[in-house]
Image (cartoon, rainbow, N blue to C red; front, side):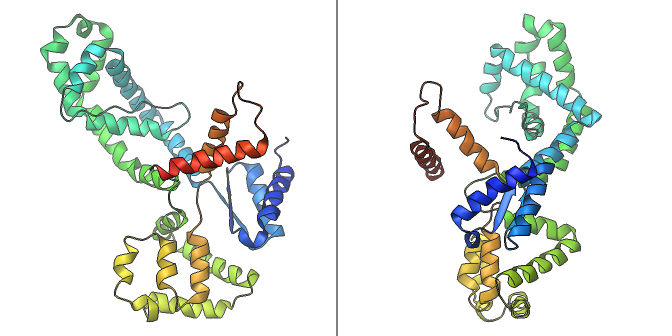
Length: 324
């Protein structure tokens, strides 16, 4: 299949028509140029359907850019030497595992750039145990501890600047990692979380969000003025928003569920809020679905009919969700 904007748009439109345009709010894809163009074509045909790039993919690309910076790359290389040292010598790994606070070090992945920083975080958490190891006679008295490579690793572990740099980098990227985990999860919608973080940073996003409310009202034959009036009820905590349970519930319920329970006095705003806040912000769940297809549709098991294969994938994926 040729993945240009036109062919991708035709593919998405086929699915949208099958589901029903009124039942589709949002399309999330990779943020490559052809998908961006396809998203614009979809929005041109259906004004009520909006496109956004996969938040997980965007965050992964940001982490990729950070990890490619010379200082960070050098730090990651040194951390990788520690990881290789720990897992290539079972005699030292078994010593570390006897420590009560020892945690498994995350190994960096080839395509998931977050793992570079997860490795740095897990190594930093194990700083005390690693330093205890390289000064212990179990290491210094062992023949492996006297080789050139192991002495180099020992120097890294005892280098305070290395640990200071690890701490600084972990502090910088930890909000991105936290957000990536939230948007990459399948168990709850995450679009509201992304918007919340953006609204804190830029008033332009708030203006764009109000424009989105107006557009949504227009294409769904709703009164935008009425919706704007209802925003005041929400902002000033009046009527159904004034119920004593509303504020405590906001800290525990998912945003879309909260609006279903407490937004009855603002029906236009409630409808929009539920539709928007129940959306996913990442397409990684679909990628995991395709990995299930690969696992089930193997070379030895390749005669499954398409409908049966889809049913098996659907059941397997939902069983995984249920077991969480």
